[in-house]
Image (cartoon, rainbow, N blue to C red; front, top):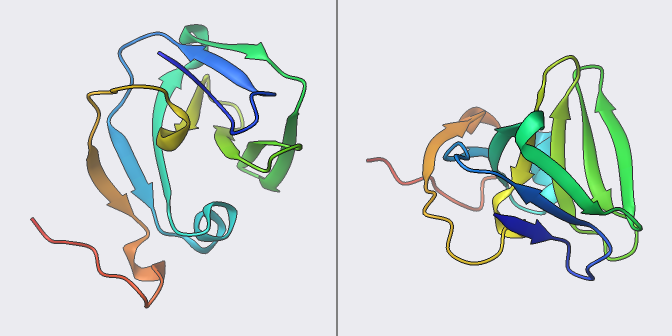
Amino acid sequence: MKGGCLCGQVRFEADAPLRDVFACHCSQCRKTSGHFWAATSVPLDRFRLTETTGLRWFQSSPQARRGFCGTCGSSLFWEPVGEARISIAAGALEGATGLQITQHWCVEDKGDYYDIPTP
């Protein structure tokens, strides 16, 4: 599966299978994404950066860093420290993914302007 940022200065490939999408509603994820962070995940050995001209990293907490494009501002990655995996913004993937949101995290921190449907 291929993906990238809005301007194309960050591109990546991830080999299937990718984890279904988790939606995180914590304050950090809401601020970095503008709403909530919806991401899939893949082990690092199945992930490749193919264009890194615009890639910038921000250490958002002692537990993780976030990758984004310094040119267009696209939020792309969340990488936990000490783990061999990376979370990828679902919206950065190209074409049909076959993925779906299967979990909502930090629901107690969600914005007051939206509701989360209950199954």
